[in-house]
Amino acid sequence: MTSIYCFSGTGNSLFVANKLALLLDGNVIMTNAPVQQVEAHEVTDVVWVFPTYAWGIAPGMRKFIEALAVQPGWGMDTLHHMVCTCGDDIGLTHKQWRMLMARKGWKCAGAYSVAMPNTYVLLPGFDVDAKPVEQGKLQRSAQRVRHVADCIRNGFSGNDVETGKFAWAKSRLIYPLFLRFAMSSRPFHVNDFCTGCGLCARKCPVKNITITASGPKWGRRCELCLG
Image (cartoon, rainbow, N blue to C red; front, side, top):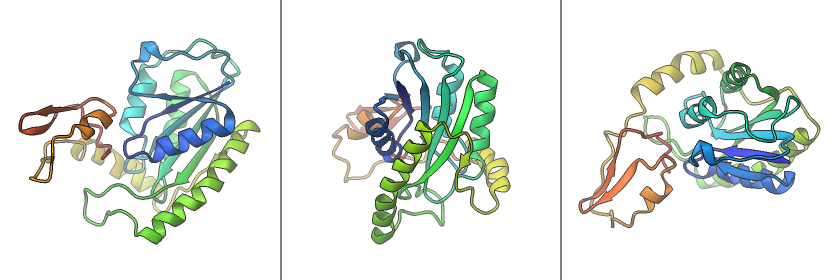
């Protein structure tokens, strides 16, 4: 059995997780489920699917892994795999994940990156992809996910990732600065186009948004998923 743990905001990682579940006959477990309710039985493979955040592990996934105990069905031979979605590259995210797995005492197998449409738009120089680029990434992702599934079945234990240029600087310098200074929801606000429908609150992976008479209000637990 394959358990697929997924943290997703805009849907890229959930899209990949669902595709892998079909190919591997696995089940998707969202990380916003209470840890004590997560169950797994006779698990041979665990797949961690999440987006890269500024070329590092998504904080929501890191917190989940750090809090998670060994689950029923996990054994000494259970293999753990990483599938990280990104706009273009992941820096050294795979190394961060391997270090986290080592601290937990879990057995690592393969690490993979899957390029998906860009979704981060909060800093200058970042924007969504043009439609042709977006469609090209989605088309290539189908073949890429099939390749990843084949590698997981075969027990591949290496790194099949796109690190990009200046990977060390991105993951060791930009990533910690991003976590410290760019993870606040304080700048978020609504305008007259907001109808108060509540979709943002329902989609928030950490239940950080409440709907009031004046519209959405953000709390202090924001994971900056941009969902």
